[in-house]
Length: 194
Image 1: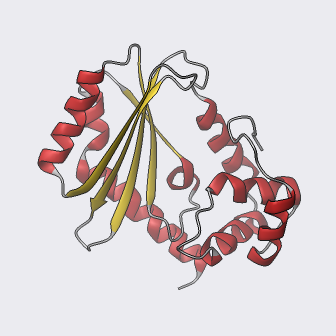
Image 2: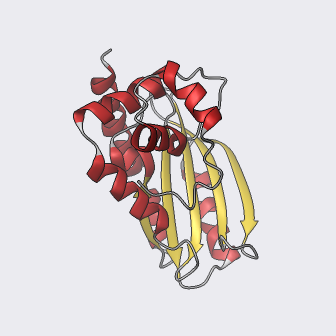
């Protein structure tokens, strides 16, 4: 399948997953605000079926956060749930990572980062996502999707590193990407915005 069509198909399915699972309304039931970020929002999803969410609350209440995951676990075919408490770090968040199996037996990684409103990184990734979307051209979109489609499944490459290479380095292929990545490491992804 053409990479542009695959990205569009993945985006459509990703939004349908959010609709079917009612994840957003479940978080909203505890007074949280959910922002969709990352490759679902930008339309740059390829082989890795990830849905990234930043979820904001005035105060991080561990019990309420757990109650959302309990509700989701009770009603959805979740295969795995991971939790990290980063309240006492500069990120000021609770990280939830869940593996959801859709009706077609595809596994979706749901990254739900529950963040305190007003914390250091409040809105940062949303601004990065918006900057990526606004800078996309047909050429950069195709380059990003081509690189993503050629990353081997057993190699972990955060999408932000690909965006960095394409926007900051003019990289246009996977063969250019790997050496460029070694020579220009993105040491702190929370500091870079295109």
